[in-house]
Image 1 (cartoon, chains in turn brown, orange):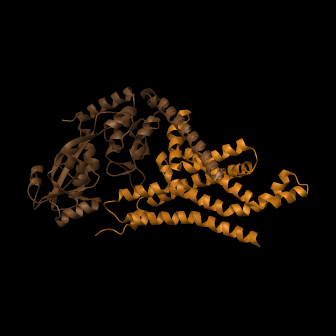
Image 2 (image 1 turned 120 degrees about the horizontal axis):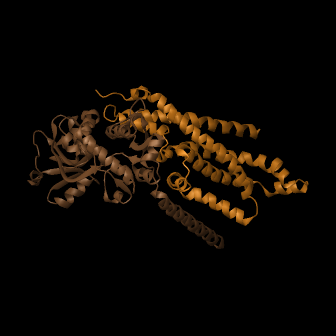
Image 3 (image 1 turned 45 degrees about the vertical axis):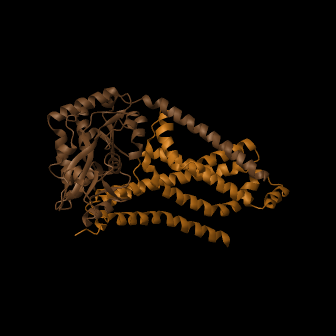
Length: 288
Length: 225
């Protein structure tokens, strides 16, 4: 008995010390987070580090030759070209969704362009430039019984299919509690349910639905954008106003030549198809 | 018709990329195993000494690596400690650092366990023969302890090799991550690619880990006779 209590005592001491250590580490981390490279330094290094995804086609991925490709990458290369005179002067850092903020805070990258959705929480830790893409909810329905307005779903017996835990589910539970929802865990299940006619339509992020409808004839995204609008924007370290301003000016200049539309043509068109560019692209950094 | 999926392994430079990823895995794992074992041997010896502050510190060190997940250590080392010290040693070196320290902690415990499991009379007989402490370790305790350490060491080594798949968190692209990139790229055109890619990765890991098991069996047999 005595032995056990003694051991527990040691364990407690150890844990307390560890917590102290962790606290020190975290505190120190915050203290050093204010640093970042100035544009002058980036020019001197002749290299800009941009964090992108490596496994999220069509936004940021690595092709079969090991090259970075995708919508985010396409725009990032242009940034490098306009800042340093050559699109080859960008060093792509392959980031993971969970560590995007940490890469900026520890100055491991100058810009994050990894399909970074602007949220209030993130805005406390990093600075977002103007957006280059927007996302909202969409509704896909069979061509034989198209759903063209949300009110149509309120008519008797119609069920709306959603995936559990998605923002679309939350949106309908909150804003349209009178619509009957049919919920599934997996994306594959919601699409199967629509094909079987178990529901009248699917509500989800519009990008997912547009891509699915393109490869499934007989189904169309009848409401391409509704509900809250999320935007995707480049992010820089908190307080890096110089680079932030540069990006915003750059986006405005690129808007003149409809560059983001060009990026859509080159990277997203094959997945989403013609006709959805206006739903997804933000040109010149300005939402209409 | 949907494709079989196996062809993704040979598209473009995919095959070489997977092997390149394996090389990163091997580099990190074996460098860390080497450093970790060397430090661990020393730590194990120190932990059998009677000095309580030393035992406490080393015990604390071990528990720190045992309790806190390696994922957290990698994150803290890469995003907090190294920027704090204003050094940028890159993801791969950070991974080697964390894995070596982890290896040393666990190896130290294996060595301590092996030494303490030896019957006390071995040490006492040595003393009775008039051997010095160094000689007792050199000629009596360590040779016997090494045999008892072997299974645990091989186990630790294979665990370290497999745990390298966590280093992607700090931007190091090793074999599992390359595999995921290949799978995600083909997710629409070749949805069955994942089974082939992961199957191939399984074979690669097997080829790295199995010789270690064989090696340990060979040693154990030799020492038995």
